[in-house]
Image (cartoon, rainbow, N blue to C red; front, top):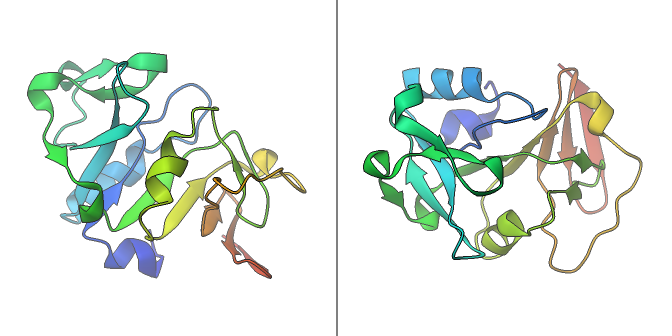
Amino acid sequence: MASKQFQGAESIQFYLSMRDEVSTGFLIDTAQRLKKRIVVPLLGSESELLTFSELRSMEPETLEEGPFGVIQPRRPFQKKVMVKEIDLWVIPGIAFDKKGNRLGYGGGYYDRILYQHQKPVIGLAFDIQLVPQLPAEPTDVPVDFIMTETQTIVCREDECESSKN
């Protein structure tokens, strides 16, 4: 939250955490208190593309489980957001390497969107999810930062910097 990317963003795309993912609830609550616009992914079963909705409430009655167990706003609580309106992306992963390569859940949903839009991307992970190297395809979009419970890794093509949190 202290990062210049978070501070400077007016509209932030968060995932709504599930299973063993890093919880985003506190980050979302904080961003809402700071009057940031919160955007979350919508996964429709008829499309291989993500769409996005503004998140106005985290109340259980406003959310539902979508395809693949993804938590998202129920239809009456959705307000579509265009990808170009998102200033910062906070995304999950199964594993990350220090070059920013990310192993996702296999659908390529985020890669297809991020490939077209050059905005800062933060991967949230636990230290145990960091691995020495991941295979990368030309269509994979690396994250710019990896934030764990103990460190922030700045990922660049030829270098990376790590600082302890």
